[in-house]
Image 1 (spheres, one colour):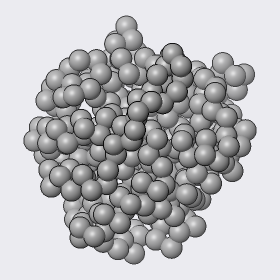
Image 2 (spheres, helix red, strand yellow; image 1 turned 45 degrees about the vertical axis):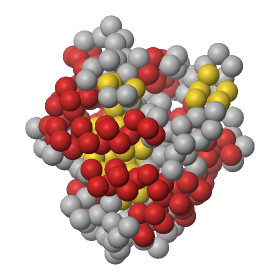
Image 3 (cartoon, helix red, strand yellow; image 1 turned 135 degrees about the vertical axis):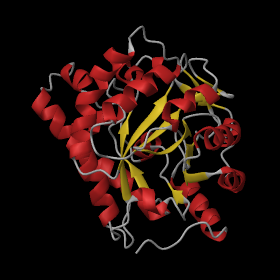
Image 4 (cartoon, one colour; image 1 turned 90 degrees about the horizontal axis):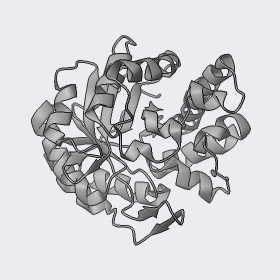
Length: 308
């Protein structure tokens, strides 16, 4: 980074622009992601492609880059014959690649280590349903080892993201609590409920009194659901809000194709900012062009400043 300010300090007086969907940028670069490990496979097979994808977002104006560790777990790597020592090294590499891409920009970036839900490891879409039949303690034991590796790799924040269930959020916060690294917590939602069906007012209460949590919000959701969720997150927790929805296109798991048109519009983020959003970006199918437009919109609104 070109600044010694923490991300938490920056959120006190800035709106920061996140990156967009890593997978769609990797596909645009010609990468094949038809694998249970998804983009995490490239940590071993083509790390230069991941760094290039991060760099595309940094050039577009992203101030926070999210690592390629969403689907990277010890269990998932083990199924590919990768032992724990090498798996830990790949998790560390995810941080190094994002950091390297950011250091090539004049302003630098913050790096957020992606910690996806348990369902992401299953690679069967269950991260959009939650309720895996595991207890909070069991989910804690699953998440803790990789959280400890990522926290030790020098990240600025842990992104506990695409969380479908308040029970899993509790487990993630418990696992991250002793790492000494700030976190943000973002649910994937449908309307004003988590994907598991819990009211967002209840779900956000899990993070309300947790000092390590520097932002709460939503990601990997329809853009139309973002505004109400931002308002609820801010009202329940009093914390800065993080929001990075999908493009608005619909994924059909049967045909394995996206349908419909994109509805992600940077101009609509003014309402999110007014309601308390301080970290804003995009998730699936939101590419560098949209992040560039978002960065321009945020800058024009006078909500960001120079970190250097």
